[in-house]
Image (cartoon, rainbow, N blue to C red; front, side):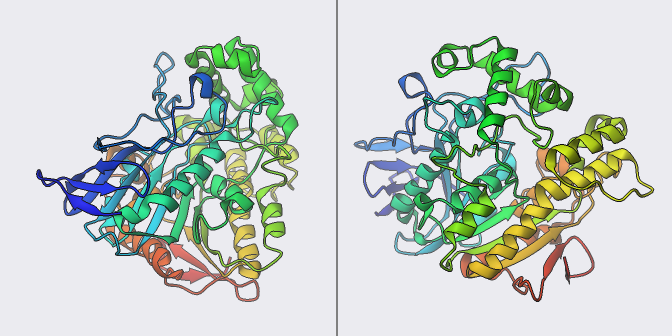
Length: 478
Protein backbone atom coordinates (compact mmCIF):
# COMPACT_ATOMS: atom_id res chain seq x y z
CA UNK A 1 0.00 0.00 0.00
CA UNK A 2 2.61 2.47 -1.10
CA UNK A 3 2.13 6.21 -1.11
CA UNK A 4 4.18 7.99 -3.78
CA UNK A 5 4.39 11.21 -5.78
CA UNK A 6 4.12 11.27 -9.56
CA UNK A 7 6.39 13.25 -11.86
CA UNK A 8 4.15 16.32 -11.55
CA UNK A 9 4.32 16.33 -7.77
CA UNK A 10 0.76 15.03 -7.29
CA UNK A 11 0.37 12.43 -4.53
CA UNK A 12 -0.67 8.91 -5.49
CA UNK A 13 -1.71 5.92 -3.41
CA UNK A 14 -2.04 2.25 -4.27
CA UNK A 15 -5.14 0.67 -2.73
CA UNK A 16 -4.85 -2.71 -1.06
CA UNK A 17 -6.94 -4.26 -3.83
CA UNK A 18 -7.74 -2.18 -6.84
CA UNK A 19 -5.94 0.52 -8.74
CA UNK A 20 -4.14 3.72 -7.92
CA UNK A 21 -5.59 7.10 -7.01
CA UNK A 22 -4.09 10.49 -7.76
CA UNK A 23 -4.96 13.42 -5.52
CA UNK A 24 -3.48 16.86 -5.03
CA UNK A 25 -1.50 18.81 -2.48
CA UNK A 26 -2.94 21.58 -0.38
CA UNK A 27 -0.77 23.40 2.17
CA UNK A 28 1.31 20.32 2.93
CA UNK A 29 -1.64 17.91 2.98
CA UNK A 30 -2.69 15.18 0.55
CA UNK A 31 -6.29 15.56 -0.56
CA UNK A 32 -8.31 12.93 -2.44
CA UNK A 33 -11.93 13.63 -3.32
CA UNK A 34 -14.80 11.76 -4.91
CA UNK A 35 -13.48 8.23 -4.28
CA UNK A 36 -16.22 5.81 -5.26
CA UNK A 37 -16.70 3.08 -2.64
CA UNK A 38 -19.91 1.67 -4.16
CA UNK A 39 -21.55 1.70 -7.58
CA UNK A 40 -24.29 4.25 -8.31
CA UNK A 41 -27.48 2.94 -6.60
CA UNK A 42 -29.79 3.61 -9.54
CA UNK A 43 -31.15 1.65 -12.48
CA UNK A 44 -31.14 -2.06 -11.64
CA UNK A 45 -29.42 -1.24 -8.32
CA UNK A 46 -32.20 1.10 -7.14
CA UNK A 47 -33.38 0.21 -3.61
CA UNK A 48 -30.87 -2.68 -3.48
CA UNK A 49 -27.97 -3.21 -1.08
CA UNK A 50 -24.86 -1.25 -2.05
CA UNK A 51 -22.54 -2.94 -4.52
CA UNK A 52 -18.85 -2.40 -3.88
CA UNK A 53 -16.90 -0.59 -6.57
CA UNK A 54 -14.80 -2.98 -8.63
CA UNK A 55 -10.98 -2.84 -8.75
CA UNK A 56 -9.43 -1.13 -11.76
CA UNK A 57 -6.15 -0.96 -13.62
CA UNK A 58 -4.07 2.17 -13.81
CA UNK A 59 -4.53 5.55 -12.12
CA UNK A 60 -7.78 7.39 -11.41
CA UNK A 61 -7.99 11.08 -10.65
CA UNK A 62 -9.46 11.95 -7.23
CA UNK A 63 -9.51 15.73 -7.58
CA UNK A 64 -13.17 16.70 -7.26
CA UNK A 65 -16.02 15.88 -4.90
CA UNK A 66 -18.52 13.37 -6.16
CA UNK A 67 -22.10 14.61 -6.53
CA UNK A 68 -24.26 14.84 -3.45
CA UNK A 69 -26.99 12.24 -3.19
CA UNK A 70 -30.05 13.85 -4.81
CA UNK A 71 -31.92 16.04 -2.32
CA UNK A 72 -33.65 19.37 -1.88
CA UNK A 73 -31.32 21.92 -0.23
CA UNK A 74 -32.38 23.38 3.09
CA UNK A 75 -32.80 26.95 1.87
CA UNK A 76 -33.90 26.26 -1.71
CA UNK A 77 -36.58 28.47 -3.22
CA UNK A 78 -39.94 26.83 -3.99
CA UNK A 79 -39.20 26.87 -7.72
CA UNK A 80 -35.61 25.62 -7.38
CA UNK A 81 -34.34 22.32 -8.69
CA UNK A 82 -32.97 19.51 -6.54
CA UNK A 83 -29.21 19.04 -6.33
CA UNK A 84 -27.04 15.97 -6.62
CA UNK A 85 -26.44 13.08 -8.98
CA UNK A 86 -26.48 9.31 -9.23
CA UNK A 87 -22.79 8.53 -8.64
CA UNK A 88 -23.00 9.74 -5.04
CA UNK A 89 -21.68 6.83 -2.96
CA UNK A 90 -18.24 8.33 -2.58
CA UNK A 91 -15.87 9.47 0.14
CA UNK A 92 -13.05 11.97 0.58
CA UNK A 93 -9.69 11.82 2.33
CA UNK A 94 -7.49 14.54 3.83
CA UNK A 95 -4.16 13.18 5.09
CA UNK A 96 -0.85 14.51 6.39
CA UNK A 97 2.15 13.97 4.18
CA UNK A 98 3.21 10.78 5.95
CA UNK A 99 4.50 7.34 4.92
CA UNK A 100 2.12 4.44 4.52
CA UNK A 101 3.42 2.83 7.71
CA UNK A 102 2.75 5.93 9.87
CA UNK A 103 -0.24 4.31 11.65
CA UNK A 104 -2.07 7.60 12.14
CA UNK A 105 -5.46 7.81 13.86
CA UNK A 106 -8.44 7.97 11.50
CA UNK A 107 -11.62 10.04 11.86
CA UNK A 108 -14.63 9.17 9.69
CA UNK A 109 -17.30 11.88 9.40
CA UNK A 110 -20.99 11.06 8.82
CA UNK A 111 -22.89 14.21 7.91
CA UNK A 112 -26.31 15.14 9.24
CA UNK A 113 -29.36 16.54 7.52
CA UNK A 114 -32.37 14.74 8.95
CA UNK A 115 -31.73 11.67 6.73
CA UNK A 116 -33.18 13.68 3.83
CA UNK A 117 -30.46 16.16 2.79
CA UNK A 118 -26.81 17.15 3.15
CA UNK A 119 -23.51 16.02 1.66
CA UNK A 120 -19.89 15.45 2.56
CA UNK A 121 -18.85 18.23 0.19
CA UNK A 122 -20.37 21.06 2.25
CA UNK A 123 -17.66 23.66 3.01
CA UNK A 124 -18.27 23.26 6.75
CA UNK A 125 -16.94 19.70 6.52
CA UNK A 126 -13.57 20.42 4.92
CA UNK A 127 -11.17 18.11 6.78
CA UNK A 128 -7.92 20.02 6.35
CA UNK A 129 -7.77 21.34 9.92
CA UNK A 130 -8.02 17.80 11.29
CA UNK A 131 -5.34 16.49 8.94
CA UNK A 132 -3.00 19.29 10.00
CA UNK A 133 -3.15 17.82 13.51
CA UNK A 134 -1.93 14.40 12.43
CA UNK A 135 -5.25 12.69 11.65
CA UNK A 136 -6.35 10.95 8.47
CA UNK A 137 -9.80 12.46 7.95
CA UNK A 138 -12.48 10.73 5.87
CA UNK A 139 -15.95 12.05 5.00
CA UNK A 140 -18.57 9.76 3.52
CA UNK A 141 -21.84 10.06 1.63
CA UNK A 142 -24.81 7.73 1.78
CA UNK A 143 -28.31 7.38 0.36
CA UNK A 144 -30.86 9.86 1.69
CA UNK A 145 -34.62 10.26 1.66
CA UNK A 146 -36.81 7.69 -0.05
CA UNK A 147 -33.83 5.84 -1.54
CA UNK A 148 -32.01 5.56 1.76
CA UNK A 149 -34.74 5.14 4.36
CA UNK A 150 -38.24 4.60 2.96
CA UNK A 151 -39.52 1.23 4.17
CA UNK A 152 -40.33 -1.02 1.22
CA UNK A 153 -41.44 -4.59 2.03
CA UNK A 154 -39.65 -6.01 -1.03
CA UNK A 155 -36.38 -4.12 -0.54
CA UNK A 156 -33.66 -4.30 2.10
CA UNK A 157 -34.42 -1.90 4.95
CA UNK A 158 -32.31 1.07 6.05
CA UNK A 159 -30.26 1.21 2.88
CA UNK A 160 -28.55 4.41 3.98
CA UNK A 161 -27.12 2.54 6.96
CA UNK A 162 -25.97 -0.28 4.67
CA UNK A 163 -24.07 2.34 2.66
CA UNK A 164 -22.36 3.61 5.79
CA UNK A 165 -21.32 0.07 6.76
CA UNK A 166 -19.78 -0.43 3.32
CA UNK A 167 -17.93 2.89 3.54
CA UNK A 168 -16.53 1.94 6.95
CA UNK A 169 -15.42 -1.44 5.56
CA UNK A 170 -13.71 0.43 2.74
CA UNK A 171 -11.82 2.43 5.36
CA UNK A 172 -10.73 -0.78 7.06
CA UNK A 173 -9.46 -2.18 3.77
CA UNK A 174 -7.75 0.88 2.28
CA UNK A 175 -6.95 3.61 4.80
CA UNK A 176 -3.45 2.22 5.32
CA UNK A 177 -2.55 3.61 1.88
CA UNK A 178 -2.63 7.07 3.49
CA UNK A 179 -0.79 5.96 6.63
CA UNK A 180 -4.01 5.52 8.57
CA UNK A 181 -4.39 2.87 11.27
CA UNK A 182 -7.50 0.75 10.72
CA UNK A 183 -7.36 -0.24 14.40
CA UNK A 184 -7.68 3.42 15.53
CA UNK A 185 -10.83 4.61 13.80
CA UNK A 186 -13.15 7.19 15.35
CA UNK A 187 -16.59 7.41 13.75
CA UNK A 188 -18.18 10.78 14.37
CA UNK A 189 -21.23 12.64 13.21
CA UNK A 190 -23.78 15.27 14.06
CA UNK A 191 -27.58 15.10 14.32
CA UNK A 192 -28.78 12.45 11.85
CA UNK A 193 -25.17 11.43 11.28
CA UNK A 194 -24.73 10.84 15.02
CA UNK A 195 -28.06 9.01 15.15
CA UNK A 196 -26.96 6.75 12.30
CA UNK A 197 -23.73 5.90 14.12
CA UNK A 198 -25.74 5.16 17.27
CA UNK A 199 -27.74 2.66 15.20
CA UNK A 200 -24.54 1.09 13.85
CA UNK A 201 -23.04 0.78 17.33
CA UNK A 202 -25.61 -1.87 18.22
CA UNK A 203 -25.17 -3.95 15.06
CA UNK A 204 -23.01 -7.09 14.97
CA UNK A 205 -22.02 -6.14 11.42
CA UNK A 206 -20.31 -2.97 12.69
CA UNK A 207 -18.07 -4.62 15.26
CA UNK A 208 -14.44 -3.78 14.66
CA UNK A 209 -15.18 -1.02 12.15
CA UNK A 210 -14.49 1.72 14.72
CA UNK A 211 -13.02 1.83 18.22
CA UNK A 212 -14.14 5.32 19.31
CA UNK A 213 -17.24 7.36 18.66
CA UNK A 214 -18.08 11.08 18.86
CA UNK A 215 -21.78 11.88 18.78
CA UNK A 216 -22.73 15.56 18.40
CA UNK A 217 -26.42 16.19 19.18
CA UNK A 218 -27.38 12.57 18.48
CA UNK A 219 -30.85 12.22 16.97
CA UNK A 220 -31.60 8.58 17.79
CA UNK A 221 -35.39 8.36 17.38
CA UNK A 222 -36.37 5.65 14.91
CA UNK A 223 -39.65 4.98 13.13
CA UNK A 224 -41.83 1.99 13.76
CA UNK A 225 -42.90 0.06 10.67
CA UNK A 226 -46.36 1.62 11.00
CA UNK A 227 -44.89 5.14 11.12
CA UNK A 228 -42.70 4.34 8.12
CA UNK A 229 -45.68 3.07 6.17
CA UNK A 230 -47.61 6.26 6.92
CA UNK A 231 -44.65 8.37 5.81
CA UNK A 232 -44.28 6.50 2.53
CA UNK A 233 -48.02 6.77 1.85
CA UNK A 234 -47.86 10.52 2.43
CA UNK A 235 -44.86 10.92 0.11
CA UNK A 236 -46.59 8.86 -2.57
CA UNK A 237 -49.77 10.92 -2.31
CA UNK A 238 -47.95 14.25 -2.54
CA UNK A 239 -45.77 13.06 -5.43
CA UNK A 240 -48.59 11.34 -7.30
CA UNK A 241 -46.77 8.00 -7.24
CA UNK A 242 -47.97 4.59 -6.08
CA UNK A 243 -45.85 3.94 -2.97
CA UNK A 244 -44.28 0.63 -3.98
CA UNK A 245 -40.80 -0.29 -5.16
CA UNK A 246 -41.60 -0.68 -8.87
CA UNK A 247 -43.50 2.60 -9.18
CA UNK A 248 -40.98 4.58 -7.12
CA UNK A 249 -38.10 3.24 -9.20
CA UNK A 250 -39.76 4.51 -12.37
CA UNK A 251 -40.91 7.86 -11.00
CA UNK A 252 -38.99 11.07 -11.73
CA UNK A 253 -36.82 12.11 -8.81
CA UNK A 254 -37.96 15.72 -8.54
CA UNK A 255 -41.58 15.05 -7.42
CA UNK A 256 -40.39 12.59 -4.77
CA UNK A 257 -37.78 15.01 -3.46
CA UNK A 258 -40.28 17.85 -3.46
CA UNK A 259 -42.78 15.73 -1.49
CA UNK A 260 -40.13 14.92 1.11
CA UNK A 261 -39.18 18.60 1.30
CA UNK A 262 -42.79 19.68 1.82
CA UNK A 263 -43.24 17.23 4.67
CA UNK A 264 -39.90 18.28 6.16
CA UNK A 265 -40.81 21.96 6.23
CA UNK A 266 -44.46 21.75 7.32
CA UNK A 267 -45.30 20.22 10.70
CA UNK A 268 -49.00 20.87 10.09
CA UNK A 269 -48.88 18.93 6.84
CA UNK A 270 -47.15 16.04 8.59
CA UNK A 271 -49.91 15.91 11.20
CA UNK A 272 -52.64 16.15 8.54
CA UNK A 273 -51.16 13.21 6.67
CA UNK A 274 -50.89 11.02 9.75
CA UNK A 275 -47.21 11.35 10.58
CA UNK A 276 -46.22 11.33 14.23
CA UNK A 277 -45.55 14.76 15.72
CA UNK A 278 -42.57 13.40 17.63
CA UNK A 279 -40.56 13.20 14.40
CA UNK A 280 -39.08 16.37 12.92
CA UNK A 281 -38.45 14.70 9.56
CA UNK A 282 -40.62 12.32 7.53
CA UNK A 283 -37.98 9.62 7.04
CA UNK A 284 -35.70 8.01 9.60
CA UNK A 285 -34.11 4.62 10.30
CA UNK A 286 -36.85 2.03 10.68
CA UNK A 287 -37.19 -0.64 13.36
CA UNK A 288 -37.72 -3.24 10.67
CA UNK A 289 -37.16 -6.35 12.79
CA UNK A 290 -34.37 -7.58 10.52
CA UNK A 291 -31.56 -5.05 10.53
CA UNK A 292 -32.74 -2.83 13.39
CA UNK A 293 -34.61 -4.98 15.87
CA UNK A 294 -34.70 -2.41 18.69
CA UNK A 295 -34.14 1.32 19.25
CA UNK A 296 -30.44 2.24 19.54
CA UNK A 297 -30.29 2.45 23.33
CA UNK A 298 -32.07 -0.87 23.77
CA UNK A 299 -29.92 -2.48 21.09
CA UNK A 300 -26.77 -1.26 22.85
CA UNK A 301 -27.95 -2.66 26.16
CA UNK A 302 -28.22 -6.04 24.45
CA UNK A 303 -24.98 -5.71 22.50
CA UNK A 304 -23.08 -4.64 25.60
CA UNK A 305 -24.15 -7.51 27.85
CA UNK A 306 -20.44 -8.21 27.85
CA UNK A 307 -18.38 -5.06 28.52
CA UNK A 308 -17.44 -3.19 25.34
CA UNK A 309 -14.03 -1.70 24.55
CA UNK A 310 -15.70 1.23 22.76
CA UNK A 311 -14.96 4.77 23.96
CA UNK A 312 -17.60 7.47 23.60
CA UNK A 313 -17.62 11.27 23.52
CA UNK A 314 -21.17 12.64 23.36
CA UNK A 315 -22.87 15.97 23.87
CA UNK A 316 -25.48 18.46 22.75
CA UNK A 317 -26.11 22.18 22.38
CA UNK A 318 -27.97 24.30 24.90
CA UNK A 319 -30.64 25.68 22.52
CA UNK A 320 -30.91 22.98 19.86
CA UNK A 321 -34.39 23.59 18.48
CA UNK A 322 -33.92 27.29 17.92
CA UNK A 323 -32.36 26.36 14.57
CA UNK A 324 -35.78 25.17 13.42
CA UNK A 325 -38.07 27.69 15.13
CA UNK A 326 -36.21 31.02 15.11
CA UNK A 327 -35.53 31.55 11.37
CA UNK A 328 -38.63 32.82 9.63
CA UNK A 329 -40.26 33.89 12.87
CA UNK A 330 -41.74 30.48 13.58
CA UNK A 331 -41.08 30.72 17.31
CA UNK A 332 -43.78 33.38 17.72
CA UNK A 333 -46.39 31.29 15.88
CA UNK A 334 -46.16 28.28 18.17
CA UNK A 335 -49.25 27.76 20.32
CA UNK A 336 -49.83 25.89 23.53
CA UNK A 337 -51.75 23.34 21.47
CA UNK A 338 -48.51 22.65 19.57
CA UNK A 339 -46.71 22.06 22.85
CA UNK A 340 -49.40 19.67 24.05
CA UNK A 341 -49.52 17.83 20.71
CA UNK A 342 -45.78 17.18 20.74
CA UNK A 343 -45.77 16.07 24.38
CA UNK A 344 -48.60 13.65 23.64
CA UNK A 345 -46.88 12.21 20.57
CA UNK A 346 -43.50 11.88 22.29
CA UNK A 347 -44.98 10.46 25.48
CA UNK A 348 -43.30 13.04 27.71
CA UNK A 349 -44.63 15.25 30.46
CA UNK A 350 -45.44 18.87 29.75
CA UNK A 351 -42.83 21.26 31.15
CA UNK A 352 -43.79 23.18 34.24
CA UNK A 353 -45.40 26.45 33.18
CA UNK A 354 -43.05 29.39 33.59
CA UNK A 355 -42.95 32.97 32.39
CA UNK A 356 -41.92 31.81 28.92
CA UNK A 357 -43.78 31.74 25.64
CA UNK A 358 -45.27 28.64 24.09
CA UNK A 359 -42.49 28.77 21.50
CA UNK A 360 -39.79 28.75 24.16
CA UNK A 361 -41.54 25.92 25.99
CA UNK A 362 -41.72 23.81 22.82
CA UNK A 363 -38.08 24.57 22.02
CA UNK A 364 -37.00 23.40 25.45
CA UNK A 365 -39.19 20.29 25.35
CA UNK A 366 -38.06 19.25 21.87
CA UNK A 367 -34.40 20.06 22.56
CA UNK A 368 -34.43 17.75 25.55
CA UNK A 369 -36.39 14.98 23.82
CA UNK A 370 -34.44 14.91 20.55
CA UNK A 371 -30.91 15.67 21.74
CA UNK A 372 -30.15 16.27 25.44
CA UNK A 373 -31.89 13.19 26.82
CA UNK A 374 -30.41 10.79 24.24
CA UNK A 375 -26.93 12.22 24.82
CA UNK A 376 -27.27 11.74 28.58
CA UNK A 377 -28.63 8.20 28.19
CA UNK A 378 -25.86 7.19 25.82
CA UNK A 379 -23.22 8.59 28.18
CA UNK A 380 -24.72 6.74 31.14
CA UNK A 381 -24.86 3.46 29.23
CA UNK A 382 -21.29 3.78 27.94
CA UNK A 383 -20.05 4.74 31.42
CA UNK A 384 -21.43 1.51 32.85
CA UNK A 385 -20.92 -0.95 29.98
CA UNK A 386 -18.21 0.44 27.67
CA UNK A 387 -14.60 1.45 28.17
CA UNK A 388 -15.29 5.13 28.87
CA UNK A 389 -17.70 8.00 28.36
CA UNK A 390 -17.07 11.73 28.16
CA UNK A 391 -19.79 14.37 27.99
CA UNK A 392 -19.91 17.94 26.76
CA UNK A 393 -22.44 20.74 26.35
CA UNK A 394 -22.02 23.56 23.85
CA UNK A 395 -23.40 26.78 25.33
CA UNK A 396 -21.87 29.60 23.25
CA UNK A 397 -24.73 31.91 22.17
CA UNK A 398 -24.64 32.73 18.47
CA UNK A 399 -25.42 36.35 17.55
CA UNK A 400 -27.49 35.09 14.61
CA UNK A 401 -31.01 36.41 14.07
CA UNK A 402 -30.43 39.39 16.33
CA UNK A 403 -29.14 37.18 19.12
CA UNK A 404 -32.17 34.87 19.18
CA UNK A 405 -30.43 31.84 17.64
CA UNK A 406 -28.41 31.03 20.76
CA UNK A 407 -26.49 27.76 21.02
CA UNK A 408 -28.75 26.22 18.41
CA UNK A 409 -28.47 22.93 16.58
CA UNK A 410 -25.35 22.85 14.41
CA UNK A 411 -23.76 26.05 15.73
CA UNK A 412 -20.84 24.00 17.06
CA UNK A 413 -19.94 22.68 13.58
CA UNK A 414 -17.72 25.58 12.41
CA UNK A 415 -15.84 25.40 15.71
CA UNK A 416 -15.30 21.64 15.60
CA UNK A 417 -14.04 21.73 12.02
CA UNK A 418 -12.04 24.94 12.33
CA UNK A 419 -13.96 26.34 9.36
CA UNK A 420 -15.34 29.59 10.75
CA UNK A 421 -14.95 31.82 7.71
CA UNK A 422 -17.24 30.40 5.02
CA UNK A 423 -20.80 31.50 4.32
CA UNK A 424 -22.43 28.60 6.16
CA UNK A 425 -20.27 29.27 9.22
CA UNK A 426 -21.19 32.96 9.22
CA UNK A 427 -24.88 32.05 9.11
CA UNK A 428 -24.45 29.89 12.19
CA UNK A 429 -21.81 31.74 14.19
CA UNK A 430 -21.70 35.29 12.86
CA UNK A 431 -18.77 37.21 11.46
CA UNK A 432 -16.56 37.31 14.56
CA UNK A 433 -16.71 33.89 16.24
CA UNK A 434 -14.20 33.22 19.03
CA UNK A 435 -11.37 31.37 17.31
CA UNK A 436 -9.98 30.21 20.64
CA UNK A 437 -13.18 28.22 21.15
CA UNK A 438 -12.66 26.54 17.78
CA UNK A 439 -9.10 25.59 18.70
CA UNK A 440 -10.26 24.27 22.06
CA UNK A 441 -12.98 22.06 20.56
CA UNK A 442 -10.94 20.72 17.68
CA UNK A 443 -8.00 19.89 19.91
CA UNK A 444 -10.35 18.01 22.23
CA UNK A 445 -11.82 16.02 19.32
CA UNK A 446 -8.36 15.15 17.98
CA UNK A 447 -7.02 14.25 21.41
CA UNK A 448 -9.97 11.91 21.89
CA UNK A 449 -9.34 10.30 18.50
CA UNK A 450 -5.69 9.78 19.39
CA UNK A 451 -5.98 8.70 23.04
CA UNK A 452 -9.62 8.29 24.09
CA UNK A 453 -9.23 11.19 26.53
CA UNK A 454 -10.49 14.60 25.31
CA UNK A 455 -8.91 16.43 28.24
CA UNK A 456 -11.47 16.37 31.05
CA UNK A 457 -12.76 13.83 33.55
CA UNK A 458 -14.72 10.87 32.29
CA UNK A 459 -18.43 10.74 33.06
CA UNK A 460 -19.47 8.26 35.73
CA UNK A 461 -22.99 7.80 37.08
CA UNK A 462 -21.75 8.27 40.64
CA UNK A 463 -19.61 11.27 39.64
CA UNK A 464 -21.16 12.95 36.58
CA UNK A 465 -19.10 15.46 34.66
CA UNK A 466 -19.96 17.62 31.64
CA UNK A 467 -17.45 19.80 29.82
CA UNK A 468 -18.89 23.21 28.90
CA UNK A 469 -17.80 24.81 25.64
CA UNK A 470 -18.42 28.53 25.39
CA UNK A 471 -18.87 29.31 29.09
CA UNK A 472 -16.61 30.68 31.78
CA UNK A 473 -17.03 27.52 33.81
CA UNK A 474 -14.90 24.60 32.60
CA UNK A 475 -17.09 21.73 33.75
CA UNK A 476 -20.45 21.31 35.41
CA UNK A 477 -22.80 18.67 36.73
CA UNK A 478 -25.51 17.62 34.24
